[in-house]
Image (tube, rainbow, N blue to C red):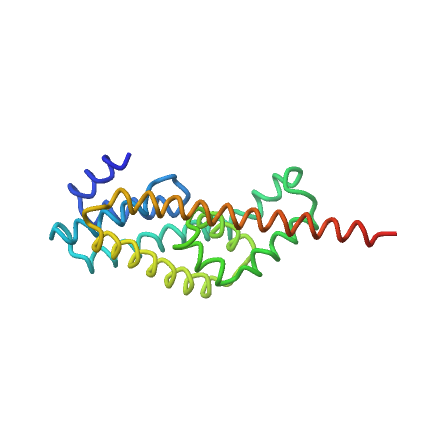
Length: 200
């Protein structure tokens, strides 16, 4: 797939970059991190302007995130209501909403560049929970700008080792996500055990 994305980037330039990162922000399994690193490498070779690439990548990601937030905000609750039997009762759904609100700006910010697999789900959850659009957009813009700058800069610095850097970052992202999931499950088990032991 990366060959097709690279061909599209080489042939169509900035518009292709915008479309790909926007689609990935909606949840499509596209290797955007590697694409941004390759973009930085192409900028080193003079094939694309590095500042333009940064602006296009950040703008495309934010656009995709905004669509995800809008779907969660105006369609999320109806979808949740349809699948109440799967997700739990109304009380459970309220708890999920509260959790999404408690993530706040930190959840939005870190899912833009550190734990990117969570990004599309954070977008939907933030919208469905009624998290402030203005705050969501602010943290989204900061996070996506940092992510675009970081990965394009890495491609610029390590232009001769793009594939290796992309693979390391991909593994690191999933490792962090795995650690977070393990920590969450451990906390849930501890909380459930503590709750059950305090019951008469």
